[in-house]
Image (cartoon, rainbow, N blue to C red):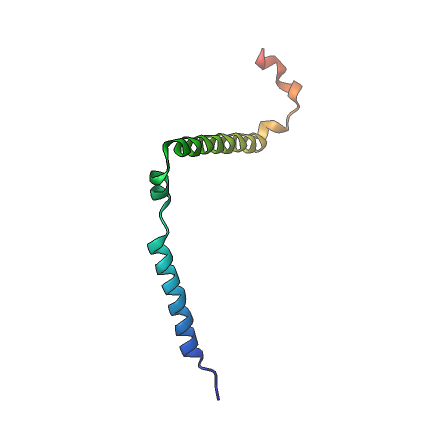
Length: 83
């Protein structure tokens, strides 16, 4: 007796497809979730987004500063141009 690989493959793929279809039909999109929130929760979400974006920009500036070829110079090497 051989194992029915083809049938099991089709059955497994069908179950995964059914699960994905059910998930996509029942789970709201982020925009729908945001629209369903109360105004005070929206303010908190917006504040968190703004804080996260500010933090990402700060990290990006630090990374760019580390990749700057002039960053390898000593701090006192360019003192005259700053004054």
